[in-house]
Image (cartoon, rainbow, N blue to C red; front, side, top):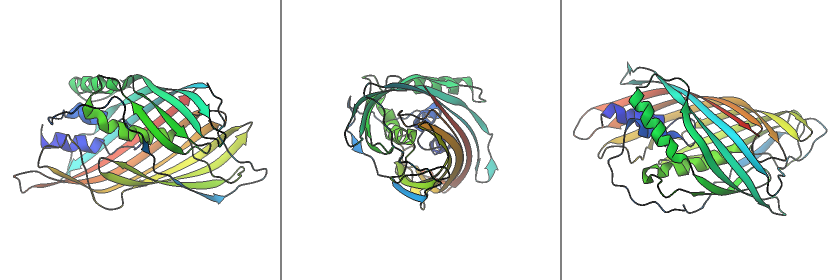
Length: 328
């Protein structure tokens, strides 16, 4: 595995957080040579880091408290697709830009229980996972991507979310033949589960209301601070439309921890900044948004040192991502 391939693999992981698909792109370029250990059939549930929600302005009258109230036994299906473009330079030298194929999947959910306090217990599963659209990657790389991403087929689990959209706990159950090297995917999928529901404030709000949700996202040894600004542009008959402005920032340089990085190589993320805008339409009697469209642009700088070499590589990446969700 060449150094440039390792750099590319690590960099692709630093795309839009929450998609849960970054390790799949990584493994399309470089297969790990480290020993694999058995993965438990059921991953231990981990409490999610709570987000901070702050109401900025309550909006116009009439106002109401936004609460999610699905029914026990309710089933939903969401079609999700993520498209991506990437360009990069190494030590100031421009590398060819990449048109990475889109990733599509179906997310199926079933509500098992709704507690008196509003907590919602639901099961989920991934289906129809595939790569779609055009790409300028070599056919062999595309086949590797398709082979790896299809290993997500059959993933399922359960989640507890409160009636304001905040995830309390997420647990994954993996198929017996699931690749242990993709354990990272589980951690990032937990982030994506939390992103599915728009988090709403405790207070009553009306048209024009604005609120801010701040949270920390952690993966591969890296922590990002994410701030989502929401504006309620319309609400009628239990259906709310919100504009979203999203920022992600790394608070200082951080070491990237990936099993795919060759022994002795060190990768430091010097900076990461991302900005996104979009819109989401939610129905208060449903778990998943009726529709979400989010476009993000991310800029990353990484510094890499190679064993037995005095050379230090500086890589800059620009990544644009479009995420679309439609549910029924």
